[in-house]
Structures are given as structure tokens and as C-alpha cells.
Length: 172
Image (cartoon, rainbow, N blue to C red):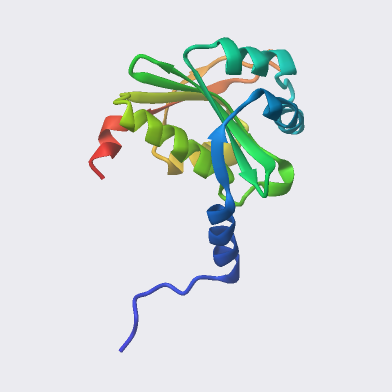
């Protein structure tokens, strides 16, 4: 008799164990320097200390979180909760920890908050060249709504404006 149970690979087990060790918590002022370091390693136009400080301390719509592994920040996510809409403003994972599910865990964390707060939609912009991020967002149920021409000021690259209907996934 054959078993339909999938046997996990060593890599899948390692990834699963790593995810159990990742702690997501609200971003604080003491986290900002580590977040800025990750941002610089992730984006051609990174945010600075002042931008993150303003978001964490003064933006009443902002919700910012860090992913920690053994008390080391390995990723972060920022969002604005605007009435019944979530706008993902930024998300990044340290290069040494990419492709391990941390970005997905951060995204799901925000989406879960949105569902609990009865948000209707989640939106974000992503460079059209960022295939890994686009694939992750599609995996999470985002769809390309439109193209924003010349959206990124550093090289005038277009952005996909992606949307996820949170109501559709609440009944799953």
C-alpha cells in the first residue's frame, strides 16, 4: 500500500525549523540601524534612519515589524493601514537569509493583521524586473492590477501595482 504522504527533503526540514525560530515583532527605534543596513543591501534607493524613525514614531497609519532569528534582525516589513486598505510600503530580507521563507512569513503576518482588522484589500508596488518578489506575491494571491510607468526615480523603471482581495481569502 502506497502512502500519499510527501517525504520532506532536508532543505524543506531546515526551512521549516528556521521558520519556527523566526520571531516577528513590532519595529522599535533600537531596530532602525539594522533595518537601514538591510535596506541598503536590498534597494538601489534605500530609506535612511530618518524615514524609518518617522514611520515608526509618527505615522499613525504605519505598522512596521522586524523578523528576528536568535535576536538578530534578518528582515522587516512596513505597511500603512488606511481604512480598509493595507499598503505594503517596504519589505526586505538580509541577503544572507533570502530564499528561506522569511519574506513570505512577514507578508503573511501583515495579511493576517489585515484580515483581523477587516481590511478589504492589500496593495503594493514592485519593480517589473523583480521576478522573485513578483512570484512570491502571486503565490500569496496578489494579482497585477496595472503598470505604473516610470515609477522608480533612480532609473525610471516601471512598477507593477499588485492587489490582493483579503475578503476572498478569509473563507479559506
